[in-house]
Amino acid sequence: MDGLAFIGKIVEKNDIPTADYLATVTVICGKGGKWKSVVKKDEIPLGSLVEVYLPDSILPEIPKFEFMRQRRFRVRQSKFKGEISSCLVMPLGEDLSAKNLEIGTDITEIRGVKKYEKPVPLSMRGEVVGKFPEFIPKTDEPHLQGALHLFEQLKNNPYYITLKYDGCSGTAYIKDGKFGVCSRTLELRDTPKSLWWAMAKKYNLEAAIRDFMITPNLAVQFEVIGEKVQGNPLGIKGNEIRVFDLFNIDKAEYGSYSDLLWFTQKYDIPMVKTLASGAEFDMTEKELYDFAEGVEYRPGVPGEGIVVRRTHGHKLMAGERVSFKVINPKYKERG
Image (cartoon, rainbow, N blue to C red; front, side, top):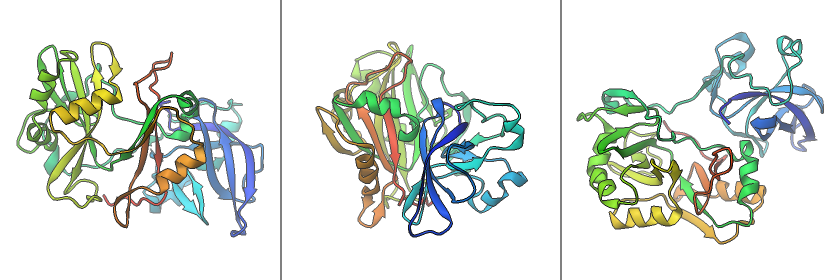
């Protein structure tokens, strides 16, 4: 699912006992997923078609979205009167009503919606070589609400849950003998100012990848955390990485959980923290939301959330990996 905005339908609506003018709604968006939101009680009737804007949507600065200016036009998961609102739901505009669009229609381009990218200080970005390599997937985990088919696929299968770190993702890889380092969206040149190259050298990622030998063409994906990165919610000195993925470029598939453990332990490279694992996944959606709401980076500092995955890197027919994130509604970004 690549879209950020969809046509949806309100299939459930409930009053909030502690709020006179608000209600919770459940909205289905076809391929866009099934989401919950908080809306004005009398604004959108049950059964209505609506416009649904998913988390990390950046809305255009037009009168229609002026009420989002204080939020810098960014859609984020929030809580109202104790109820989680994971997306923005708005009445269907007259222009879209006239087009008779179906549930699940992607309206990202129609509405001029862009994806939010976490800012990185200019002094730490370095120089760009080019676009992110096409032979490696970008690090972009789907939300549970937009990936319920993956949630269903995970049931009764081996799984693991890791802490989600609020940092800047990076990728180090070797392809046909060449070593490269990337931010989330770009390949970078080896310069003293590049935070990602500094981390690759600090942890000797090139030597580790060349020695690992599962495949000669391998990518290691990680999160950069620490000083000057997203407000440093973990409160650490300097900068560190947390590896969360191995990707076999030749087979175009992710490594297993055991591969990830083996790699990080063998080369003494920090890995994302494992919070839970098991032979058969049997948690409910609510249990996952409660789990995410309870994670912390350090005492008194809520964590951003969790990432839930199948242990063996299984893929579906469409090429999707059984992997998704659940965001902690208590987490407040610092960057």
